Every structure is written in structure tokens, then in C-alpha cells.
Image (cartoon, rainbow, N blue to C red):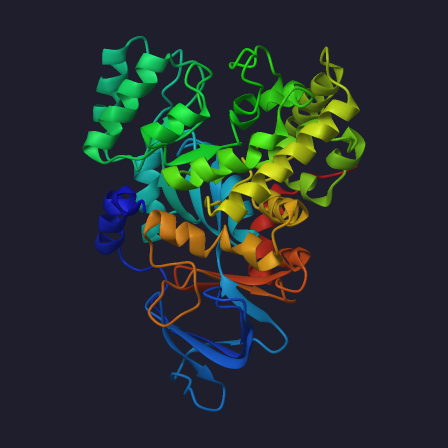
Length: 448
């Protein structure tokens, strides 16, 4: 659908040296290919020059001389995952290596940056060439929002400037007027540049669908779109992604709205982990004591604790409203899936209690809790991403780019097994769990 999105990205791939030039062979591995819900046991997978060059029975596929051997016995090889709503530090930030390493260590080999800046254009190429360690980067330009856009003409000019600069897509943030948004959408469609992100309150979901929005993130605007016809369709003040509207919406409209989304061809990145970590009854103590928090600065975790506490203390907010909102959102996710409206995996990391990489596995679990099977949830971060972006990734198949993750247990049997990363192959370069742990060591917080 969005193959136009990656023209600059794919040209950069062609221009750069492949990071993993040596050959690697996964021996006696179980393949989770992701093109269908199967596990293929006892396979050899050979990677050469960054591509999968051979796949077949361990008894039939020869291992290239001098290849690096990875023992796949009782392990599961699947495509690398994508984080389709990431926040990437500036290219010169001291936090950049932390964030990118955390993604890779958790099996995330592609990220879509959702708050872009000029340094990301250089970073995108450095990641592809291997000059900087980290996943492939799909980048937005700086967001178009109520503060950055002052008029229709201003919005049009910003779209054209970002297209000329070579960003992959336009990021929409809140605050745009309906006229500004429609002008931005029209110009983006004219130049062939996808636009994605939030649904401005002045626009609403249905008009955003008609305008051709590539992705709606956070299910933004869906609860407001389900308000009764005689209510304020903007929802008034709804709180964090309209959590306070949960008692007012008409759930009878969920299936119809999901069908309209499918017909429009707009994809959704639910970021359910962001929402549930912020509004659920899970205590700040439990969230801040999760093992992955040791990789985040203490001051960051303290800010996250304060953000959740402010949410819990907000006027009109209570546990029952929050539980109703969570149930509604899960219902919408399943309805979108059942209607054929496509979903993409994304958690919005790093954000409140969403540690990069780790939060993708929480997101997968929430998708399964919403009613998707483990296979269907994994598709949102593999085959669906490849289809959306038009990339040569997303499956374990001959000729595919070798962005892979080796797991110690079957993720189709239990989605929590996606966390059991034995190693990651990034653009054909193999990193064992020991090597990944060594990369993570500098970012662990010392506890007295």
C-alpha cells in the first residue's frame, strides 16, 4: 500500500554497503516463517551478504566454508520485529545508543520514528551503512501541529519542504484546524507522501479516513467518533486519549467504524501499552519495579511515576472509567482486525513505563488479550510492516533481507516467548545474547 513511502529509504539501501557481508548458518533450527501459521523443524538457514541465500532440511543444505555457525536446536527463528511508533533521540544525543541498543536487544530490527528532526535523515543512512548500531529507521519530519502550523499556506509549504528534504512521511500532531489538516492532506497526497499520527479534534476520524491518512496512531479519535449523534462530537475534554468519554460512547457503532476504516485503507497503530500503562489499575510501584526499568535513568522513571499519578488524580477519573475505556479499546482493536482494517505493531517508546524494545512485548501481549492469536499479533510487527512499507523483510524466506530473531521457545504457542531472545541478526550481522548483554551493560543503573 505505502510503497511510495520508502523510495528515499530504498535508494539509500542500494547506495550503502551491506553491514553483514560474512556468511552465517543457523543449523537444525525451527523456522517460524510468518507467511503462514506454521513451524518448520530441522532446518538450515544460510545468510550471505545480508540476504537469506539458502533454506532447507538440515540434511540437504550445505554449510558454506568458514560460515559462522549458530546452533538452532530447540530454538525458533522468525523475522525481526518492528516498532512502528518510536521516539528517537537526536542524532547527537547521549541517549541515542541506549535507545537503539534496547530496541535491537529485544528483537526489534525496524523502527518508525514518530517525532522527526533533521539529524534523523543522516542517522537513517548511518544505521543502514552500519556506521551507527541500531535498527533500520523510517523517519518523519518535525510534526505539523497547532503550534508549528500557523495557516493553510504554512501547512502546505511545510509538506513540500519535508518532501524535498527526503523524510519518509508527515507526522500529524494535535491542534490543526480542519482547513489546515485538509490542505496538508491534499498536498501530501499530491506529492505522494504519506501522513500519519494523531487525528485533530477539529477533523474527526471519519474525515481523516476520507482524507487518506496512512496510519492513525493511539486509536486517536475513535472513542469520540462513537459518541451519540446528539452529543458534542469533539467529545469536549476527554482526558488522555478520551479515557473520560468511556461511559458516554455508543458501542453499537464499533463494527461500522471498523468497516469504514478498512474501506478507507487506513492502518492503525494502537499503542495499547501506552494507554494501559498510563490509566490501568496497575500500581506505580509494580510498573517502576519491572526488571527493564534498570535500563532507564532514575530521573526518567520518576517522571513516569509522576505522570501516572497525575492521571490517577485527574478530576473525573476513576478505576471504573479506566477499566471501561480499556475494554472499549480492546474491543475496537479486535473489531478493526475482524473487519480487515490493518494493524501495525507499535508501543510509543520511550514513553510512560514503555522501555524501548521491552514495551513491544507488552504490546504483543495486549493484542493477544484483545482477542488476536499470537500469530496474528506477530503479523502486525512482521509481514504487515513489510507490506505497509514495501520492504524486503517480514518473513523468513529465500532472498529476504536477513533481519531475524532467534528465540528460545515457540512464540506461536505463547506470545510471552517473544521475549526469550537468544540472539538477533541485524542486516545479516549476528549478535548472540551474550553480545547483546554486553552492549546493554553500560546502560544498567547501579543500585546501592
